[in-house]
Amino acid sequence: MSAGQGSAVVLGGKTGLLGQALCRCLTGAGWHVAPVGREDLDIHSQDSVIALFDKHAPDVLFNTIAYTQVDKAEDEPETAFRVNEKLPVLLGRAVKGKGVRLVHYSTDFVFDGHKHTPYLPDDPVGPLCVYGKSKLAGERALLELELDGLCIIRTAWLFGPGRTNFVSRILELATERQTLNVVHDQVGSPTYTPDLAAYSLELVNAGGRGVFHLVNSGSASWCELAGEAVQAMGLTCMVTPIVSAEYPQKAQRPAYSVLDTEDFTNLTGTRPRPWLHALREYVFQHL
Image (cartoon, rainbow, N blue to C red; front, top):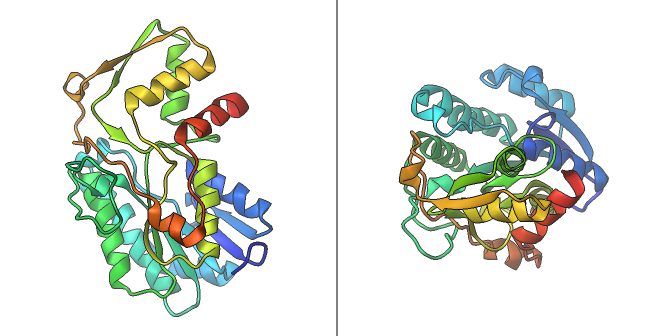
């Protein structure tokens, strides 16, 4: 499928951080796009999902809806699994045999963080928290449906315009405080949502199927990401590294979850740009 010839439904496209970026990207590429919010769809009803497809008849369905409150999920596992596992199954069943491609987004939290080199899509998984377990369950349930056009994109550490995120929140706090303590012993792949959207479209146009990792290149700790954002904004706030034990959270997170994007590059010829370049664009153009 070439750019400009497609129609897409983007679940989470009205208010979601990634969903909004996908809608802008697809529209700019000439696609007919239907952004769908939770008010437009009963995400727990197969009939509601089928009615949505009958109404829009898309070529591609992008699912960005997820339960992402990582710590809260420890207390609400049923809700997390209902959104992160059951909804993808409803979507998969609705598109099966209809020639609709499903692009579903997953997370670096499916890994246990014990590696010291970037995770490949086929590396062993081992989520440490309910959120990660629920997202992995969604992946596995979709793969079991054996859909012709399924593409699962694992991504991580999203920031971008349109909704509060880690970077925007750090910069807000940095204008109010002299110092910020930020965790330095969790390392991952910061990802700019406009880049993720553009790379997702490249993946679709290249016929990508199966599981891919899609993030900006490079790696950072939360402290490094925060420090670079504060510096780019020209603020004087001091960003101080701390260990996770000094900032206790209910859910356990992987210490290292950098994602390898080589499969995406081999298919599309595109190498994701460094997260630092994307961060500076975000700060200079959107904040």
